[in-house]
Image (cartoon, rainbow, N blue to C red; front, side):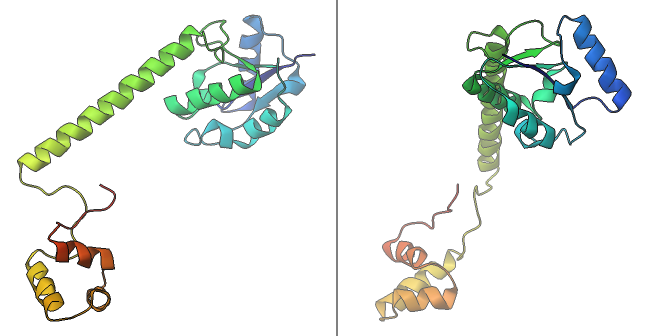
Length: 197
């Protein structure tokens, strides 16, 4: 038989938790107090890492329902809320949030879920555009993007000269405390690559 669970991470005290339970009861959700989960863990942590949420998740079965008063109970940010809802969908668990109405948020056809995806995509595009714009402005000011090179450009000719007189690449790499690949790039005339950028 499907079970309805209440979960909150928003109530600051037992009386606030009881008020939340009464508000959800008034909204039409019948919840056994033994299936009500309340915790005061950091709102900065992902929902799936909260102790009470983890304990509740272990009890969930397909067909069960989670009820919350606010979306903030389902995650620390938009992406975390989406990840929590996707996890519930994969388990076959329904999720209802009084804050957004009587809709199964975990359903693929959920209007709220599609809206959350659209807002997440908008945030991602905005973040990407801001990063590109700031990078272009930095290049326009003459700043070099990426990590500082391990070896200054004036050392490149000295390294090539050392290779021409017979110094091994491994020996140069050990002496200068860089990778062999860096020395080989300098030998071949390629600019030093800034790994990770």
